[in-house]
Length: 593
Image (cartoon, rainbow, N blue to C red; front, side):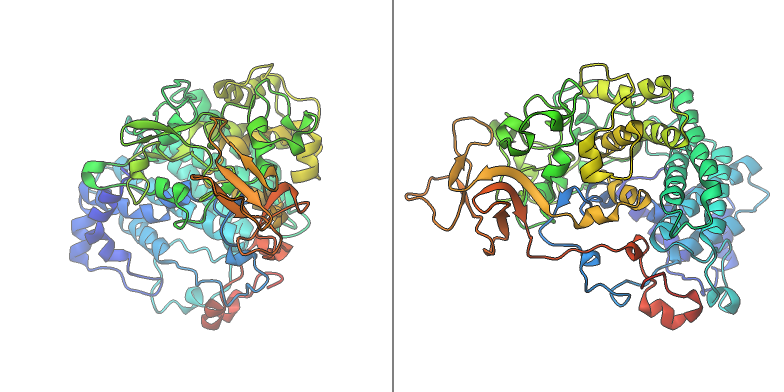
């Protein structure tokens, strides 16, 4: 199944008309059309491309962390505002499911070899697993439907929801069928779904479900605690199978961008680590807009990392940055030195430069864009000429080998079976690739108090703490953080004050130390004459720019402290939309809504 570039998805629009416009109650296509699609492998392949609408989209990957604890944004997400109610929740859609179920039911032509039919059914069932995983994450209990539903089937159309346990067990069955029947083993282009890709998704889904059941055992997962071990074991086993297959490895070729950033900002993503990706193509006008979103002062949400998160990056020697004396009052110029090399491949810092009409020019954090001082460069390219529009042609990995390593480490740590060898092969390998020195292959023996106090107060196991640190850093801006917070039961982190770098008021800052002043934070008075090229920001509490300092004239920058973002445990599940309850009251509402 070639997933993934936009032009191919667009090309199958004719097939989508057969089913994509249908919802649960609509009738199947005519027998003539059915024969033309299901009577040949070419027809099956073309139809199978329509399943991509349940797969992670390009945007869900590179801007998927816009709503997360470590990203400050220009405005609070509506879900985090106290005014959010079921009336604000959009209606759920089941169109994609009907499309998939219709394919599974219709793919029975004996003229096509059984192995071929099973392969395409496997792609459909993997897609159904992804569809239901998303629904369960969002709503908890949902109706399990594994066939096309006719308009006369009122028992299904207007029935109750099925239990999370039933639905997720069905998801696991779909995943296992996919792994057993997808015939593709390798894909040089990394645009085809292989057995390893199915295993990688199984490791992601099973880890999510196992940890959700563990950390929500006294709440939403009450009564499911006896299945935690099964799900975590499934996650670890799936990840181990990928690793033992030996078809992937961590990218260690530094190139011009660094081994880490090359995965996200290269024209062609390194295929040794990338397992599945969206391939961009300038000739086919298949592009994305990462540069525009991360360099514009008006387009996108102004995504900027918080100081709390930047503090989690280790020193280059592998020791915690937060063990340094005075870490919390260090200036930006000082704090970014001597850190995990991935930091310089994730944000603007040091001597970072960009290409302007063929000339490399210094590019410090731009306070016309960044809200906190920590401006992302991951997913962007360094050509300024690509900034104003959907011009990016760097590939977008959907899932990569690094996540599989993280999934194995976390699942085994949660099971209490993580060994020294497991650590060295996963977290140790990731930190070695990053360029961290010190004994990175040795498991930690000390729980980092910063991680406990700021992020995970209920966790005392140093292995779990460090794996969570590593996961946050390695997968930053890849659309995984929100789900991680939900399964770890740490949603309250989404309501933390957005804080940035440490500054003093009425002081010029040269953020890249090139001798040119970049920004000045003032308490109402701009020095005269104003310096050309300097961005001036009023940090007086209550001012119109919404920036302030913790202590009035010094401290960490704070953004939008005037906007109340709130969290309560009911928010671990979205409400059933009021409009859906009008149609079917038997669905019932989620707790607390």
